Each structure stands twice: as structure tokens, then as C-alpha cells.
Image (cartoon, rainbow, N blue to C red; front, top):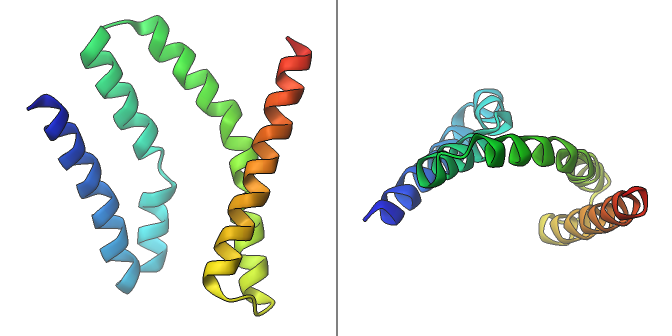
Length: 112
């Protein structure tokens, strides 16, 4: 039952952003840009473990992993602006983001 509650709350957040985006793109972007997924994940993790060290580690890791994800938000509008159709642009932006993650993880592992 608890797992189902987590799914419903998380799905409601995503559905709300999707619906708002049809009418108020700036407001939807504001909500989408909030770290709602991260906050929900931290709440669920805390409720499951009550381990603040795990929350701290997750928060720190999320901060560093956001950096390569920004590639997606740079590449997608650039491709769309240059006439690439939505789904190919989405796939290319996801692929570039994945490469960014791979490079970031490789560099992080070399530094460790």
C-alpha cells in the first residue's frame, strides 16, 4: 500500500506539470525545474530508513549528476530550433546527455 501511495503522489506531480504546460508553459517550467523528484525520493528514503547520512549522500550525488543532465536542456531546443523533428531531437538530446553522463562518471572514477 505504501509503495502504491508513492507511485500515485509521484504520478500526480508529473501529470500536473504536463497539464499546466498546455496553458502556462512558464509556470509548468517553474514546477518542473523544482527538484520535486529529488525531494520526493529523499522523503521516501527518509521514511523508509530514517538515515540522514543516506539522505546527505543522495543530495550530494544529485547535485553533481545534475550537471551532465543540463546538456539535454541545451541540445533539445537547439535541435528543434534548427528544424529537427521532435522525436529525433529528443533521441539525439538523450543520447548526448547519456554521453555526458558516461564522461562525467569516467572522470569521477579517475579522480577517486
